[in-house]
Length: 226
Image (cartoon, rainbow, N blue to C red; front, side, top):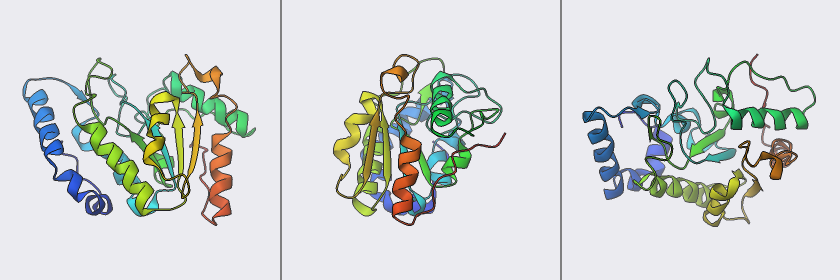
């Protein structure tokens, strides 16, 4: 876990970063790599979401569960894949929903969502690492405690964030969020198995921008570069 963490997050998360839980997690990841286990994302990208979206800049949180477990996919941003990598099925459905909401939305050539992160969209996975080709392999190793504290601190210390919670796993995190201070949007997961059960037609991207504009906060440009 060698990736450096943005200072604004270091200051807010100091207690969590120094906790026994994180020490155990660092030890686990080090042992994995000493034993030749391939893990994703690359070490330098584990905290990518935080480094592209400093604490003071967070406008929207899109919560995922685990990083992609295939080569050249995960790079520390939920639902996003590395530049040059084709969008996986869930991300294709996110783009499909964007086309439903914005008639002039153009399908991007790849699935790198970094431009969203740079505008204040925290693309947070609940678990930040995974073993290659083994989905969910780093669940219950301590990441959930860390990322739950991230959500709780955002809820406590900030106002007017849009939280997009897709699927039952993400929806369960709503208990960590003060609904009197923030805007919670829930829908089915964009996976092909559930997208037609309430993700398509959710209008979350339009609703998020309408909420931001009511607060005189610059809206998100969801259009990615061609």
